[in-house]
Length: 232
Image (cartoon, one colour):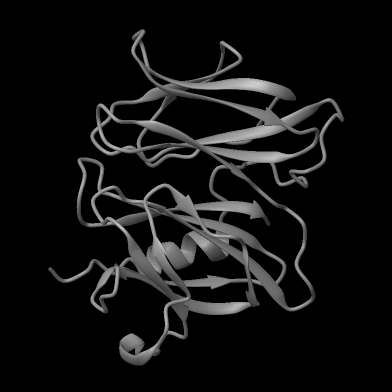
């Protein structure tokens, strides 16, 4: 199946707007007593969900593919629980230690009946002059293990070693430090060269971005992306 190309839409999202954080202040500066958490629902075929932190509702009615803004949450050991909106069904829970002044992203991943929370530690630290930071998250349960290529728009990947190899669903890369500019991001089946996902992105100097590759809302193709602005 020919991959869906959504480069223009993703380019606009990266170059012009921050997703999932309407507060343009530096996200690692808060009142000194909390951490900051945002949530993203990327579990296809699953209705809207809520997030509880330590048993207290923190985010409600999160739609598929729509990131929340950062919110301040208590530090220390916290149970992060995914529940169905308007229901008592618990999808999954994980207990993690949240550090003072640290930013986190909680993902709801997986398929119906096997939804799991995945907690990512974010950075908003500025890269060196002329650089960007880019993190890739594989959240497509239909794609299986993939190779990831990050390169020039006209790069032929036929004889190129993957930037990241054997990336499994629910896995996030480290932040890649790259020159500011335009990059083509492709995901292929492990060991393959035919793109399952193919996007062109432009990121300006000093920006830090997380790109989450996800299934269509009902599952499977076409794969899409959620773009998060970790630093404007």
